[in-house]
Length: 319
Ligand code: HEM
Image (cartoon, rainbow, N blue to C red; front, top):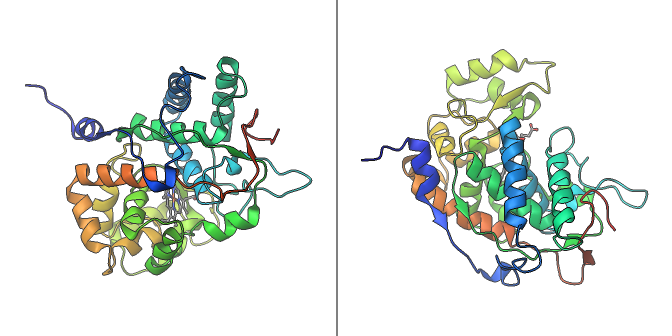
């Protein structure tokens, strides 16, 4: 009888097929099957080598996708450099000195252009790369609806307004996700992305020094590398035990009051999401299913109709 490790079982347990919700009815997993049949292979191998070089990159690209989709829809806007005519999203508060992995997407785009000239949007490449990042770290995989277009502009102020901060309350999180038609359940499932990757001291300092709903040993551990003053950029993993493994440990941490950000622990602090957090902490399969369904919903957020779009030739620059 085959014996699987917990993480292997988790990764293979849930393999999803096409989802056609109303939000992404225009998108289809077969969008490029004739025009760019090797797209999936090119993106996957670009992500595989990036993750092999640095595991964290799977997490970083997943976050880029979230930060793209929450600002005027999934349109590759986060990938644009500032220009004389607009100040973009790369240097918005939640992204400056924080969002990373742009060079990985730019390099994959170059490879895609070499095979399929002026055909595949940067927004779609990012959607595929985020999915691959999750599965390469041992999480679920799913089929990604495609056919997004790239924006011609980006907005720093929209990024500042739409992306939740680490000090957010549960009510704020529910309302910010709700404004994107994502339910509290979607929000709680998507937050499970914090089972991988790292955060800077500046984002969790006040939690580890002032909050009471935190495990003492965990607070002391984090205080060792995140001093009261200075060291703003010192990094800590969200999940100590399996930092680079995409599993349901995030929820087990929350139940043990080992959430790293204030906003993380808000999901398990006597409020409406407690029962769901407990359920995910006990059921990797349930988490996996809900995470995939919420990723598909988030990936279906598109720019409002009438917004000028294109297929960019370089992800960092409008044509
Ligand atoms: C619920 C509201 C959320 C808040 C307040 C939040 C906030 C943050 C913050 C403050 C960091 C650390 C950034 C830094 O220090 O440089 C971070 C990292 C991260 N976030 Fe979130 N996030 C949220 C939801 C999400 C969602 C929905 C996803 C993806 C589906 C996501 C994926 C990630 C990942 C993977 C990292 C680690 C990135 C890396 O290591 O490069 N987050 N988040």
